Image 1 (tube, rainbow, N blue to C red):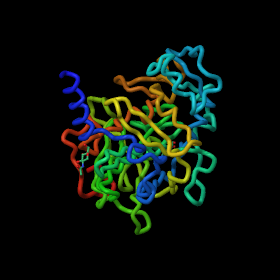
Image 2: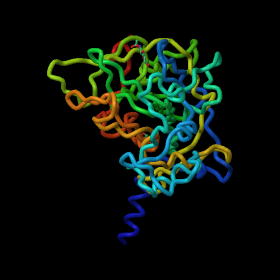
Image 3: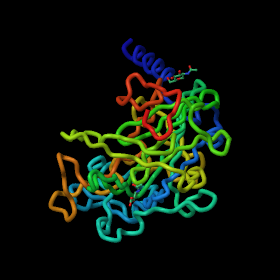
Length: 351
Ligand SMILES: *[C@@H]1O[C@H](CO)[C@@H](O)[C@H](O)[C@H]1NC(C)=O
Ligand SMILES: *[C@@H]1O[C@H](CO)[C@@H](O)[C@H](O)[C@H]1NC(C)=O
């Protein structure tokens, strides 16, 4: 009886809030829904940007897995996008992909700078985006456009840099209903904004929403201009604000060099990723560790902290940690409750 009830419960939960495996619709190989590319964002990088979208594989080639600043032994060599998830058994979330070179040197190692998009908007030779599709099986589909940068430049407060780190995963998510875009989530630092698709400016009078990536921090906004944001967790007594800058600097079309995958949650909470073809690496999506160096100790040259805010902070976790199963809301769980979807955007302001 208990078993029947729990099956029933799983069935009810599954029908309400879980993405289903794309392949379960039919027995053929799942195909990418065409609207995922038709309505994909066009990203504008800032005109003074120096840390561009970056190749996922290059991040592995230029780092080694470390725990507590010590190299993890027994890791595959070389680490590739096909075996990265083997690190989950060797320390998992304690692991930091740590730069082989000193990242604080002047000039910094070139690989941290990423790849400037070419005249078509492509990061040529660098796969710098991961597009992940969650199909709820009831007409609702969430498409995550995950933007990868090898380095995050956190910006300045009173002339001092804060929150610089190796590895930077940012994303927007578009929720579709029967192939029609409804809402877009813009990730911004530890939080973000949900905005009605119809309110977001479109590229070249078409259907593709414009996403502005802020200089250095790569936070995502719907408009160009200055965006005030307090440093998450920073509680300075004299109330200082950090500012994100966006403008139409460099055009980046993330779909031109991206890995595509579907995600489903057959057992409830653990994501299962599947590629749409046999040549796309997908195992890396299971990796639960960090994509950059661990926050340098205070003894590290150039490191400082002011009221607990550090110049150099830790690299981020990857796409699997972005709440890919959002159910009823466009917002990640735990951030906006209820999830407020803005119906207008104001230029250069965080509304
Ligand atoms: C489909 O499922 C999602 C997730 O539970 C839900 O938010 C959405 O309202 C459902 N859509 C329809 C048309 O039932
Ligand atoms: C953009 O970031 C670079 C560092 O990557 C910095 O030198 C430049 O001043 C920043 N631009 C603005 C407008 O803050």
